[in-house]
Image (cartoon, rainbow, N blue to C red; front, side, top):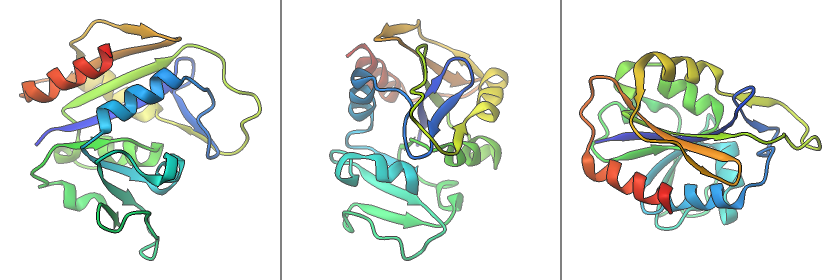
Length: 188
């Protein structure tokens, strides 16, 4: 099993969201995310889940992390509500971690068995949308872990003001098929 974290953060301050919005609009980056997540096991928080068009991803099994055990998902056959991450310690399939900030923090700071083997780090270099209001979600604590425990293995792919790179956790074996697929999806 390989755990892959995928995020897009703002270059200046590691912000990934403001309120319920991503504070930039880069369609090519959103399309890249969908290509990577299609057909995968994806874990997200409730707020992130609600930002997906029709609250779904193509052919994906989605795990929605929320404390609301009565939360209703859009597809009861393929989407599951989970209350904590313990089930993923011994999860035997590939798992893609797609946010929000609290979900990333739990995977990066809770237990070594939860730490992703691969991180797809997308960095937006433009300005934030000043109309976005609400609580700021940033992943600064995760970037600290990324800088200490991971090594960049790809060159920077740049498109539409977003730079994407792949990082692998130091000393970890990485499934080459997963890595090859990610590189293919990033190159588009």
